[in-house]
Amino acid sequence: MRTVLILSVVAAATAASAQSGAREAPQNIAQLSASGTVEVPQDWLTISLNTTREATDAATVQTQLKTALDAALAEAKKVAQPGQLEVRTGNFSLHPRYGRDGKINGWQGSTELVIEGRDFIRISTTAGKIQTLTLGNVAFSLSREARQKVETEAQAQAIERFRSKAGEIARAFGFGSYSLREVSVSSADQGYAPRPRMMAMEAKSAMADAPVPVEAGKSAVVVNVSGSVQMK
Image (cartoon, rainbow, N blue to C red; front, side, top):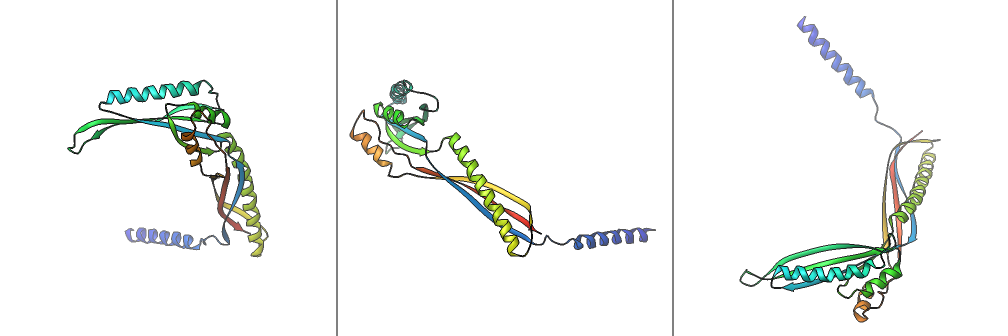
């Protein structure tokens, strides 16, 4: 009885293995990818302003930074408007400074204010009026709304190209149609400016109270579609 049971198990395992081997690997599969690109003007400007202070004690440095930041905030908030000119504080740091003997001989700190939005003129003018902080960086990008709209267009373009390419490949191999097996969609944007942005920093230091000269570039939103199809 025991021998029969063992033989039955072995026979069942053999049958299962045979069935598994009978399953053929997927045939006539094509891997492909396509992309869609939409280029649009950058509509979001971000300007960061910062300052650094040093003193023998941490409290003095912190007070000086707070005074400088409060004055800048007061100036920027006068013209703040959601979406057009938004104001927020950025990085803040405070750390000891060491002498050659390894002992603390002072403190150093920095603070940052960020002004951003769609109203380039208002933002650049406000940045020029702030005297307690200096210009740190100027960056252009796409607003969330603009990026979503453009990404939808680029995605539709990429999908259409993927479908067209899949059909061409299937026909080239002598098949009449195809079915989608798997697909992945990813996106990225590539921004570029028409001129170096360091010009804005140089102009800021050369002329106090003057608007920071800015010029937006363009962003290319790219959506990639990749996957595989079963040719029929």
